[in-house]
Image (cartoon, rainbow, N blue to C red; front, side, top):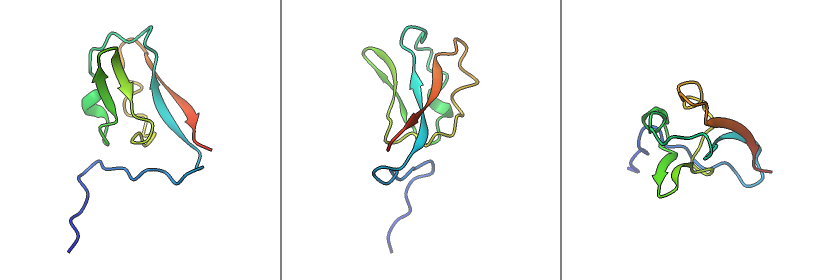
Length: 80
């Protein structure tokens, strides 16, 4: 039997599919990390430059957007 993927796993979108993803405005982001545990597929990561969203893993759920205290996260159209 094939094991199930972990909770929060998001299969990558088919090549050319259009969807919305979160992006971080590095000018506004204070790297507080509040958004990281809110992301179901764990697409938000801390880097040396601050927070970054993996565009392949992001499902576009928008759970990270409203809680950001400095409004550093936004949704953009991606793919296609």
